[in-house]
Structures are given as C-alpha cells and as structure tokens.
Length: 361
Image (cartoon, rainbow, N blue to C red; front, side, top):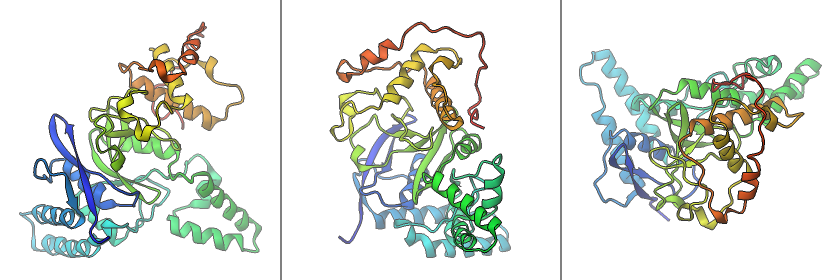
C-alpha cells in the first residue's frame, strides 16, 4: 500500500494544544521521533484539527524547517560547510522513513560511529542518545569491548573465537557474553549516565533495538513519548517512564502523572488489571515509606547486586512519584496482598539512606 499515513494525537502539552504523530506499526521510524521533538518544542506547527498526515507531508514539514533553521549571519566557509552538510542530510532524509544506519559505541551515551545519517541530528540540533554502555568497573569487559562499535565488536568476536591464542578466545567469549547479557541494549550504568547527562526538560531522541523514541527528562526522571497508535484516544497515556533496563515503564499523562493502575478507561486492548505484582508492590512500598529509608526487611536474602540495584532504582522511582497515591480498584483482586504488606515494620536505626539515582554503581 503506497503512501504511509500517520494518525495525529493532540495532547495538552504545557497548557498548549500540541500534536504528536503516532505510529501504526512497530517500524524503526526515526522520522517520527525527530518530528515529535520539533512538534513538542513548537518549532514545527501543524494546522489545528488535523487528524492524519502522510509521510510525504512529514518530509515537507521537515525540509521547510531545515531551510528556515539555516543560520543567517555566517562566514563564507561556514556557509559552504553548512550547505555541504545540508546536501548530505537531504541525501539520507528518505531513509528516515524506514531506518537509519546508526552504530553505537559502548563508551558513552552520545558516542556513535560517525555515519552520514548522524548529520541529520546535528543539523537539526537534536541530541541522539543510547544507553548500551559497558560498566567501567568491570575490567575484563572493558578490555574485551574496548572502543569497538557494535558492528566492529561482532566482527571481533567471530575472529577471536577462531583464534589459536587462548587469551584471545576467552576475550572473544567475554565480549559475546556481554552482548548476550545486555540484549535489551540498555545497561544500569547506561541508565545512570543517561539520567545524569540528559538535561532537565531537554527534548531528544533515544536509540535502542533499532527503534528511535522521543525522550525527555522531568524532575530528574527519563520518559519516552508513547507513539503507539493503539493509544491514540488514551489521553492519560502520553509518556512512559524509562527507569529499568528490561521491563516496560509506567504510563503517565502529558503532565507526567502516573495513570491509576486499574483505570478501566485507559486499559490497553482489554488487558484489565494485568498489572504485574512488582508494580503494586512498589506502589504499596511508596505509601509505606514516605521517608527515603530502604526497608531492608523486604529484600530477600541471596539477592544479586543487579537485582538489588534494580529494586533500589525502582523504589526510588516510586518515591519520586509521591503525591500520586495508589488507586487500586476493588476489582483488582490483589488488594488483600497489598494490605497484608502493611505489617509491623521494625525500622533499623538509620540503615544507609540511598538518595543518588546512581546507587547501582
């Protein structure tokens, strides 16, 4: 079917009626991520009441914006440089509708192998981030991965594993293990770095698993714009929190308020009350622990550092979301479990208070 058509969702963004473009299938569409950044920044405006838009129209809006954004007072050299970049960018613009060739490096959240595709983000002045980082404290992985990009690392693994040198073979296995263990393409170290690098209120693009998402930071917490067309009419579902490396985040409205866990109006595709146990547990923890204290009683013995880090990270997220008391509906069927948790809670004197969002380092 020839022309791609996208549905537009209008949201109240900072008290202004603002459009965002939704996605009809789970394609790796960087065009939408970029345009949604420009729409949320009010740098591109669509006619009010507009409900659908074609890929061709989106490209026209983007092209017009790029021409308008051209710097006015610049030297001849800067102008030539800009025009060269502009023509390079125009050459890859059509790829924005399908997918871009971006190749992460595991050393920093803004570090990608340089490709012509990256020029588009530079020209539009839109930061591109990823969170697939090696933890600098794990020496053997740091050595095995080095400064390789993803593509280079895959090649290195293949050649090292075929080597006659046993040290190279084991380095190849360490690198392969790293890729297998971080298949979600986000690590806790990466999440920490992202959280500290992205500026409060910044609008940017986040790359993960070949997918480009519009991202922002609100009150120290990262959120991804929900562009799935399935949520087109759900006004309480606009952002999704990015606070753990493998699960889904929690849906919030355009003002970053958590949606109530069992609000029948916002249950997606009829999955009423399929809220997982962790979510309800975290909400009840949030109610119980108004202080920043960690209840060590609730941490099972033998838990690994990663699991503990995950738990701390998620608990902290809910504490930051205070002021949104849990609204578990009677139909939730998990309430009894919830209230049982309000048992006696011996507060051990001042177990270290964890405040930094980088507890997991």
